[in-house]
Length: 103
Figure 1: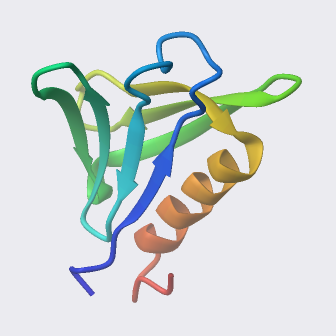
Figure 2 (figure 1 turned 120 degrees about the vertical axis):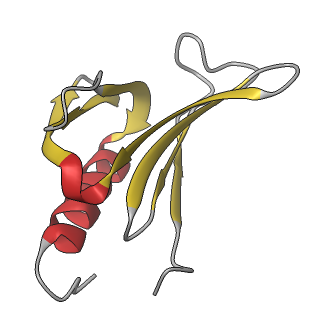
């Protein structure tokens, strides 16, 4: 089960995502936000056991996601995702946090 990974990519039509769109990777163990750059990338990770809440703010076309940590670290913020992808991210996180990881 550790090999499972779901990747959600922000739309290129949103600010800051034209050339290098943000990716959110969800595994049973962690949530990772990856912002590619011309050389390298920036990554933020929160352990699945430390995820406190997932906040989705929807607009006309796109959704913004905020994933808060109970460990006192900065939240993962990402914008420009499809509404369905934002809901899928929230549902996956909730499923992985349940005992037995029924995702």
